Image (cartoon, rainbow, N blue to C red; front, side, top):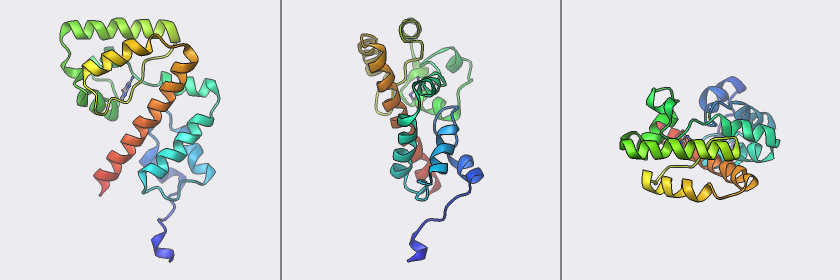
Length: 173
Ligand code: GUN
């Protein structure tokens, strides 16, 4: 049953397809490919699991670098149109491009407070959330300790990657 097995992509082709699933962090996809667990690259959940395991198994410094690669929600880069295509779509999908001046101010204050407390930006999988739910989660998570937030951010980033992989599979079909 040879034909049932998806063909393995070479490293370059794999990175071409999936290198940007983790924001500005292609080493996650590269490490997953080198571990050899990416043969079933046409199954988004299999890929999300194996790339997610790479990130979970990474050093704390590497994890923090991946968290720091994320733009602020409703931040200056978003206003300036400097986000990746995925981030632009995700932030707009949650209505973050529709903030009132007051909501925008609130995001700026929370982004700053969060960054000051933890040293990395607030990351949340925004799929299915509106900006009110995001602001509520933001204030709650500000009360956590740094280890809990780092752990939560990594889980959220893997969730974001899973969603991006599903979007890509749907678009390719
Ligand atoms: N969740 C989904 N997309 C993003 C993003 O661009 N930035 C942050 N901080 N969280 C996200």
